[in-house]
Image (tube, rainbow, N blue to C red; front, side, top):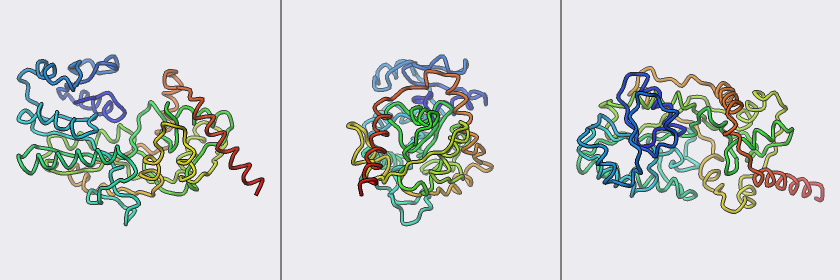
Length: 334
């Protein structure tokens, strides 16, 4: 596993280790204290190919899983490192690569890929194209996974946040402040807890039906943004105080250095419902079981006992206040 300690991959690492699999991780070792003892850690910069090869030796792997590949040059590097020494190369892409708004709000693996609003998504599409070229021309055993909004206990997932994650949004709720919700809060979105995602992912490892194929892994639970934010407020035991702002206005006023164009217009502002029937055919019995309001409580409990997750963001908080004040003044002066 290249990475193996992130939001998505940490749950996969734990479940594989618990299942008795031999798990190797290649990363910088920043979270090695959180790993199961039986995991074998190669501490290296994956871009240092000579050092990675030195530490790998003659090992061959049933699967190589790439969680931190964002641009084609990283996929090319992986191909050089692992072609001929793995039975399966699993690449994490992104559901943000789907063309939105879609002709149908129900998305499956055949939905057109295009995202003119977000370079991140276009790079993921380019990585997919390159990997399928390797598969078609030389049989490189690729499997592509497209997650949507997957979260772990380390952070409550929200639609709009600053540079330091969701804690400032939670803090606003606890202080009785309104929170900004794009649009009118009625578009549908899907949140998936990482422990659920891991079950579907592991079911595709060593699965002959997965080679040369693309799968999306998500919960079947679709919620409006109003329901998402109200679940957080309910878990905190505070009133739900939404403040609705059009996505275009949010983008026009965003602080310098933010990328809400891709995040909203290219992704979260659109209603999406995912059809995971292809995954369920390949992995019989797969079912996401953690409902969002349950996941939120897990996150809040974890964050309450881990102060390092409570990162302040005065810039984001001030932006929220200014945005709300500006719109309220406009209403009053109309």
